[in-house]
Amino acid sequence: MCPTTPSIVEFNKILTSLVKTKKHYSTAISLSHQMEFTGIKPSLVTMNILINCYYHLGQINSAFSVLARILKSGYQPDTITFNTLIKGLCLHGKVPKALQFHDDVLAKGFLLNQVSYATLINGLCKIGETRAALELLRRIQGRGIKPNVVMYNTIIDSLCKDKLVSHACNLYSEMLAKRIPPDIFTYNALIYGFCIVGQLKQAIGLLDEMGLKNIDPDVYTYNILVDALGKEGKVREAKNMLAVMMKQGVKPNVVTYNSLMDGYCHY
Image (cartoon, rainbow, N blue to C red):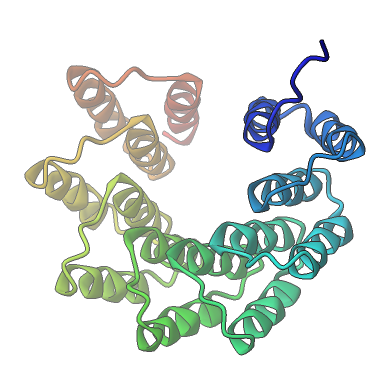
């Protein structure tokens, strides 16, 4: 008696397991080819997995060829399909193409979601197009997409790195007005921004504000402050910050001690 051929659902589970290891993308692609050779028709889930594999391997053209196949097979691509392709383009530095693809998707009547726009905003910020990212944030609100903390954090972080801290604070105030609660990433970005423009008092004030909002600082938060205090030659204050850090149960790391030693050199 011949063994029963596994169903497409079982194959998809195997492919998903391979992809989760973040090592076996080529193996997953090869297995999918073998699966089709045995006569098993791939599903939309299968093809979404293949798109994910191709983009991780840097084979963007192959990923888009799978999209063409999805459409030819009569399947309706979903947000997972589009988001994976947008992410692949952005991660490989093809942000303008990702934006063009976004326009094409909308023109064909498909819908995108918060993940799509968070990815595009992140891609724009990564290439220094913070203003374009902010404009995109404004546009999506007219399309029924509600901005979330990830989108705001990405732009706030980019503004702070550009030393446009007052603009970042305005965006932070907008978040609060829209009842989008800030998180640890929001505060770390703002604290870093205040530190690099020499406004340590405001940075430390944000640390206090985090406590009022029951947001626990992490090692990165304290490292920013220890480093900034050290660079200002305020070694005693940096040591006090280290003491506060340890009292709060946050374990210092090599960056913490390097920043403190650097502070002694500036002292």
